[in-house]
Image 1 (tube, helix red, strand yellow):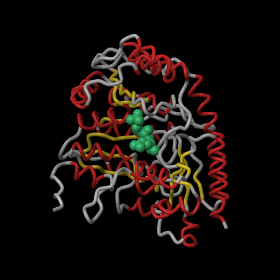
Image 2 (image 1 turned 180 degrees about the horizontal axis):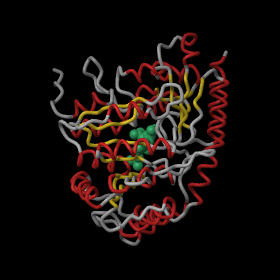
Image 3 (image 1 turned 30 degrees about the horizontal axis):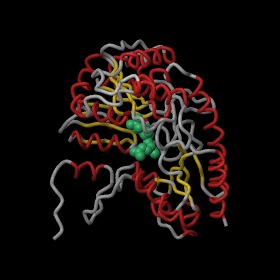
Image 4 (image 1 turned 180 degrees about the vertical axis):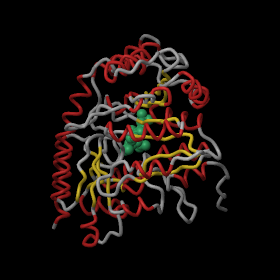
Length: 407
Ligand code: PMP
Ligand code: GLN
């Protein structure tokens, strides 16, 4: 006899992230689905964003040394002191932000926990949380976990940028948080200072907190400059800034992230975070503290990612996709609209399911970053996100395979 699914808020999470099928079946995240598809078919995995080359040896050695030195038990609740100091130094060196490592910084289990704890701390039933759309899936999941209402604001359809008028219209008396993400996953859009000033003005007028996800802060290309919204006038006191070492140092499995902001907001987040994981990653924290003093590793990664972006964008264009060239992140969004008919796929999701057979490559549909059935989801239904955080030889192979789609 089939066991009926247990009640609980997990239904809301599954629904909010598009993982609940009409027949009640529950899927894993799109990243897990597509990575499993790649593993099953032997296709090149340009779906889930993780590098195929690890971060620097000296950082790995530092973690091993910390294990050998006996840093293997629970650490301080806010995170290792040297890591909190390194985060504050990093924010000052790069952005001129003054952050007190004692009370204004909280080390978390990846950016994911920082985001979840922040949303759970500050929003609940009856509250609204505004995000851009498309959005990173965990943002929607955390809003659902909090029991709050998610109000997505579409990026402009053509060039995938902020629509400030739509944001202004979406923010109202029930808005508790505006969740930003720049550089933006999945589009690679890097919000300009002018765009961020518009967001800041809206946040100040409505007196809402901004929660900004900046995990790709160092991965920008060409002339794009990452501007933390906390650096804009009147914003430091109403902003929680989240980042993580995963992307910056190519150590996505270590899950060392952080959040910083004014002490009252960080206290609220800490209150929740300590009951999610308490603490985590004790020996990784001193290693990341060392890494954060190193500006050369992320600079070199951004430079090499920029040429790998060009390689993939050219290859996708040659294969018949229309690409919006990303200014940051690991990802490019490619429109497969011209290919779908000939390939017999109804939309980007179906194209992704068939790409391993058609071309031996895996991507993820942009609709997975949209609310099911939303206008944005429809507008972006033919778009697929591909990652270029793979070795150049792997990307060349992928591009060659994709070229077959053009004929
Ligand atoms: N935010 C965004 C926009 C991401 O793309 C990711 C995935 N790396 C995360 C948060 C999660 O980061 P972490 O692995 O540090 O939890
Ligand atoms: N952030 C990564 C991506 O967008 C994957 C993280 C995950 O699998 N949840 O591809």
